Length: 81
Image (cartoon, rainbow, N blue to C red; front, side, top):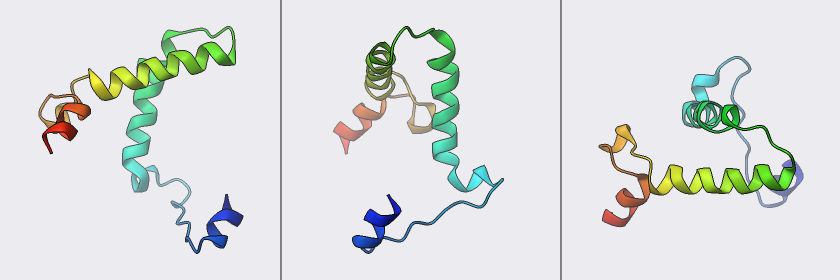
């Protein structure tokens, strides 16, 4: 990835070790994935995990109310914009 970024003149800015608040949106999403998806299943295969991840992500973006944006799903907010 670093080689590709350098080739395309993209600067990668890393967060400081031990400073997850510098990447708060990703940290929040990762926590949600752990609590609402990973902790709910025991996977038998990579394919099963991928299928369940795709289903969960669709529900997360299309059906799940997001209180930070007024209790509506992100997809609904995108349509309104």
